[in-house]
Image 1 (cartoon, one colour):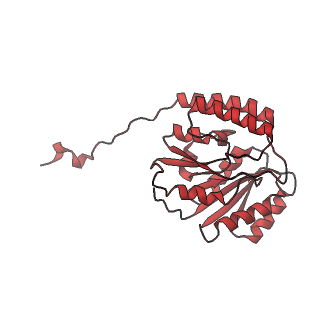
Image 2 (spheres, rainbow, N blue to C red; image 1 turned 180 degrees about the horizontal axis):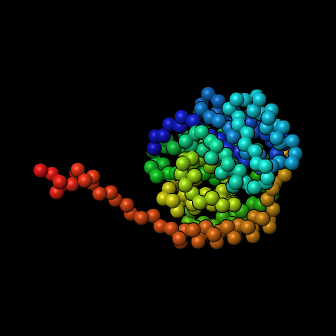
Image 3 (tube, one colour; image 1 turned 30 degrees about the vertical axis):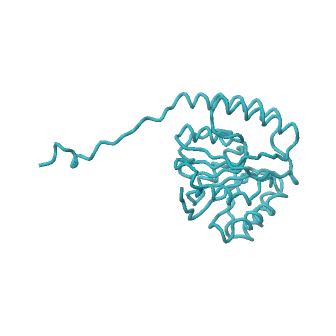
Length: 255
């Protein structure tokens, strides 16, 4: 698959990540400057710390940085949706705002598009954090959740929770939008007829801020969302579509 990217939109949802904003913006620029034409959209999901101030500093230092702000806290999926809707690039890459995703891996995901073995219908390149730098509870709970999700949804990825994802903007906007949809993006894209490719990426320990997810909102909310996505899968099937020739081209219209 050969697909030049004229403009890549990097979308980063953030909430109370004041210490991570400037380092992350700097890393993204170092990874992409001179290699890809990009814009960096931070979506501030109503932070209560100095995240907004740090975002203003990042935008002042780099004209590629854009800031989108929610007036009320709406969640990570809503922040991603807001960023994608306002993005100008045809392709989107997302990463988390906690610096655990390595911006250098953005190039790894983009390069996967040009590997001959990548299927032509590929619509999502997603990171696989094989060596996770999280607490043992987070690792175990994620492993269990991934196993259950794969068995029930057949979403073609071992790590749907990885924040590093590359996908076409227009396709994303055609998907059903709901809270926590970012966790099920692979399943939604497969439902839509697209292919999914997983690429091993780096994962780093959190060095600033704190995680916004605990056992309860990962487990119980995840179960409800999983049931909802299963319902969506069974309420939709892609038709086998063909197009009739134009009237002027039909045999019975020829002289």
